[in-house]
Image 1: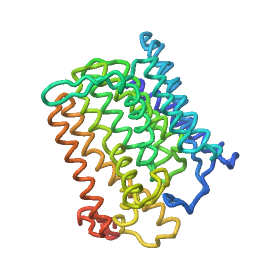
Image 2 (image 1 turned 30 degrees about the vertical axis):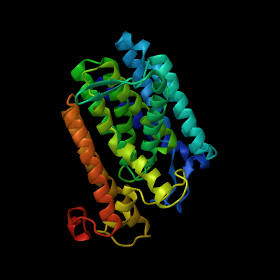
Image 3 (image 1 turned 135 degrees about the horizontal axis):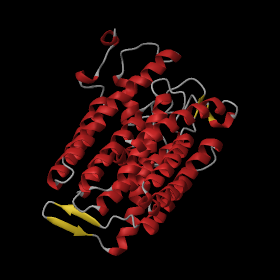
Image 4 (image 1 turned 90 degrees about the vertical axis):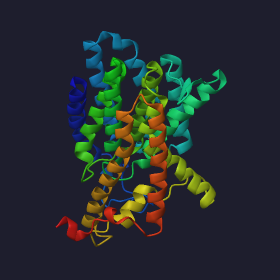
Length: 365
């Protein structure tokens, strides 16, 4: 836990410094209050990825000093992550980097990890055996998968604490499984990123003094995807379906959103909208408060939305952590999660939210 604590302390202090200094640089503040996915009414720094990245670098450097063998892998991983992080952080500062270019940079980072760390999806575990993937498909599949997870984390980053807490739980699961199989590199890296994200969360939830931003979301998502890939491929005893179930919430949210935009609404999958699952919960389930446009009520609704999704994501994270070796059980839980997601989404869209989801104002008094 040393890596987690060092990273947490560094991130907490650096994030506070960024919050104070960001007020001096207006372009770093999020002032778009009318966007379809906006749920705040005050100026907020959107460069939370900056202190997270530097906290990870500081903590990783100390870890390398304590565990010299990490020098062969940790710097390479952070360099690859820097490529993915750069497009997002520049967008956070300037607002001029298109989504397609950020995605290409993330794909470039995944390609570099493929070359430097041999991070690739080379097999698929099945209940009746192991299927080795053809050499020609390994690289494109790896690049698309890692970039997809990074983009998926950015998509679920819609409310205070949502993406942060979800990814912390996933990273801690990775650390636990890495401990079981003795993978020190993945263990230290996962705890380092989890600690930095937790330090950021101190200032992000519940009041949202700073946002993760595209840089933070792409960095954490990239690290999450790479570490899950490395853990599974470096340790054959870990089922590939462990990674699939662990990451299924942001991954399926992204796939379903693309399907909904293209085939249901007839629009480009890159066009943002306000009907993600977390947006619907914000608008139609969190009904305990009044004054929809009043700033204080909006902040409370924002904070009350995230715990629903934290619990929902644990429906995948917990069984993935418990059954990381059992391919058949993991596949069953993947199917159950998809069915649960579609059922819940359909109920909320049709204004028939399950009663156990609806917390009215009197429930909080």
